[in-house]
Length: 300
Ligand SMILES: [Zn+2]
Image (cartoon, rainbow, N blue to C red):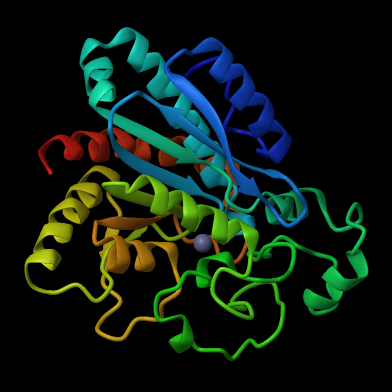
């Protein structure tokens, strides 16, 4: 393990900012970009590893309580930087392919889950959205109570709208891309035309990879999904012919017409952050995911 990123801690936005700075200072192969700002003005940080024209993207923490995905991605960033410097084949690969990481899509929500509601000016409103509770462990939404992974413009109208107001989870918002975090990631994806995308979530040890694909496209995507399932040990989930839309993966598969994967790390732990005791296993299962998708770019 490298000596900058410590993934076995409550991994905060401030740590992400600091580690991004230290890593880009140490490794020439790594660049930082800010792709937008959260509702409360926190940076939406992207880290680019390598210089290749072909590109893939891995993102994490769309959902606030799923912040262990940020720690995992930052661990991957440092590990891959070290390998770039020490392994010739990795350096050659990353001169052909760039890996973009967006480790924390929802920094306001993550901060709310980790540090509690007291520090937020709008604490009364947040407690009201949280059904009167001051316990925010289960919060998934952004700071306005919108579920960022129900914001993307793919079958948005058809998402079941049982939850019609800001809430800890599942509220799809007043319209697609109403939230700056989702809009920023959407614009970023349109600009870069990634060959593959992996969206990290928790929990359940599952991979979602299919959204209304059929025929050749189904077979093509299934090939990569099988490969990811083999290395992670996670089971593949097919949502069937009538899935609920609005997710980044769904949008990317249908509109960008390239494979995308939602990877749910960790054994199922219920509606709370994944305990750190699961981290070593998660790292072993996922550390090669970025490299495998990068290598897949060379042949596809
Ligand atoms: Zn999630």
